[in-house]
Length: 305
Image 1 (cartoon, rainbow, N blue to C red):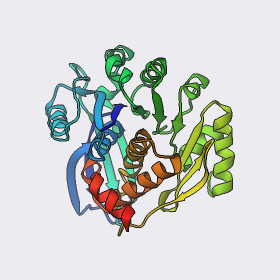
Image 2 (cartoon, rainbow, N blue to C red; image 1 turned 180 degrees about the horizontal axis):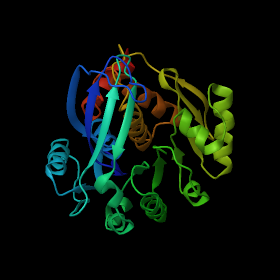
Image 3 (spheres, rainbow, N blue to C red; image 1 turned 90 degrees about the horizontal axis):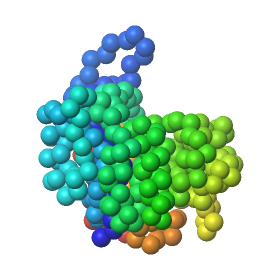
Image 4 (cartoon, rainbow, N blue to C red; image 1 turned 90 degrees about the vertical axis):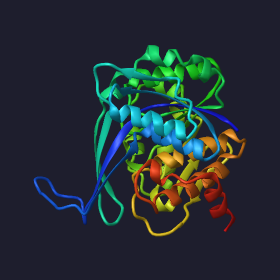
């Protein structure tokens, strides 16, 4: 079992399903509502645990019922919660999500305690970072806190995987700390200025990221799969069809966690991406964020088909 440290956000998702995404100023009637665990950090941590990783989540919650429920759920998933701190002033993070009949979504996040996760609190987790096979991060916590986590990981020669979401412009210091970056197409465009819509433009964007010092680039491209650019492999790794798409909200997080697991197990990057594509394909056939994350046996079964 591989050690994965995830540094990131913890939210409660308030999910409303409607026939279509409303336009600005428009009111629609929804047909269902659920409250479930979310946050990119928490989603990726749960996914990595279900895919057979030994996972420590570094994050922050509020001193409220939403935070207590999140901790209870993490313990059920066998996550190490020793480095989840409690903010006495800010509430736990919340995301409001509208999902249409095609599974597409619109999300608004109130970060709450996630915005209060400090560099010092990440430094307190240095011992588990030192023992990690991979440190996995996203951008739903303060950028200086993300950078501190990456600097600590590189200090101990740990592999850093960054999912640059939500999309943000990053400094050169960020790029120098990343071993594998996993943007989607809009995120890749923000980082490089290149609109990614096919293999050629994906490779062009990847080359710019390589020039910034990143050894491996994996650009997720929806149902097509993911484009990989690395020293050992470059090209599109096709996606899977695991059934009817109902909700894409956690597909990217499931992909990133599965990629981290695949890499930590010593697989070539193209095989790790294939594993990640399969995990993400299963997740989009289910509702919710963490609720949609598959278990290892399910992914292995899809790969055997």
